[in-house]
Length: 211
Image (cartoon, rainbow, N blue to C red):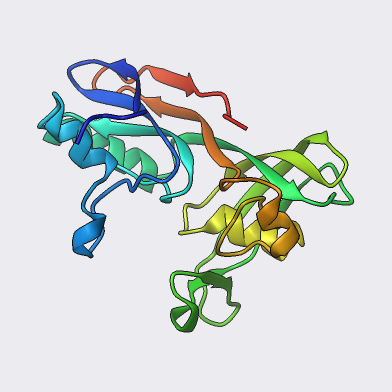
């Protein structure tokens, strides 16, 4: 498959920074018709050595770092595991939070009866924290900056839902009005900060939200 809308923001012998479009898997899915994905497209179009370090949901767009060798993969993966990276997302959420910023601290767990949904689960959930800040307020929604402290599946989407403000265009969690308010999931990984796996220099990369 061609790269098709995958932006290459940075490349050196150790890693790539790519901009993933919405409606593209980060890695192959289990079903045969889910084999097309970002990492496969990179491997087939000039970077056969590309290795996934972290993921974005199918509908989420934005920045990913891709390792180009085993040593870089090990070091970059360590940075994510040890929470040494910086990640900021831009989203559109339904309604208006009473405050302008806050912290969500709610444990999350997979919800098998409603797969692939996740849910707040105080008994079995894993600790999950998100910082949020309102950037702009519009008539029926607002633009927010989301900073995940932890990195759970669907964390930002479930946390904003729990706050009472589901993300626009979210086919898994939004109510009818919020779903109809945007033609795609309004969630974009807009800033990624990592340390260069060899030099140790801290680098920040930015991708403006397409909504």
